[in-house]
Image 1 (cartoon, one colour):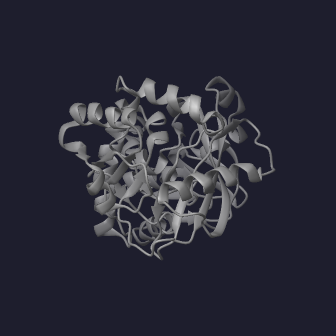
Image 2: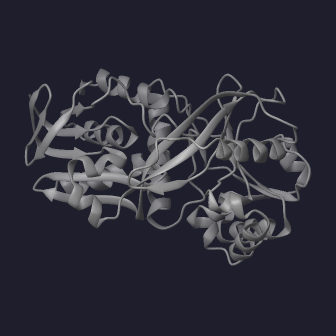
Length: 366
């Protein structure tokens, strides 16, 4: 089996490279160890969190936005231009949003308290917020499967339930035989160390484990935008550029030390059936513990209930997401001629992969 490009991994990063290659008129084979994508690409909020990024991440995110909108027309992928509401529940959080809006212009619109409540259901203590109109929403449980189906319809050959045993110049040795290609892209997320352990050690790749939950909507209300909070201001580069961000971190460290220790990014999105995806916590290790601490779920549930202004939430599902983490947000390396190892090492694969992939292919095919 021979193609122009062999992609190892059918998560969003691998599919982004397959999509970029097909748009160049290249033949593609995708090798995936499972019978369908089941990792970080489906265990997320379905949130294209474009506006809060900075630097290269913002550049890739804005490019990815155009590809997501193109996919909405080319494939059975529902992409919603619903934006994001950032809820401020303290004066220092509102100060960050005011500074951010001054930096970004039309990319961020300030909201007063009534305007926040008109867009999203929230409890007491809201002082204002901001609306980020460029951000996107997709159904995380369906989007990557729809993209894979669309690519298969355009001639991409998928080898599902096929393990990659060896990767080298011009070929991938799999459990179904040798697949040859002029170029090879390895997009296996946090499993970089399974194929290239020295590279993973050098780039200090770890696994980030997230506690996430699906809960019944307590309000029975349609919530179009994604919803972020003051905890989110500490996790995205765009907000970190604002001078007031330090005051938010200092206050939250003083008032909610346990929540910062578990890396809480309090946010939620709504699934198509009305349920809410809430989360999430962050823990880092090369080999995460297999045990889920109930205390982390309790913290997420308590804070999400407070945000929504209800006494408790009814849990439908719980899961742990895992993604690659490293000091730099993107890993792009060349372990052999014609081979690129690519991983989004910052938890923003759905946001940036479709913008990152064309840049990688430009270099790989040069």
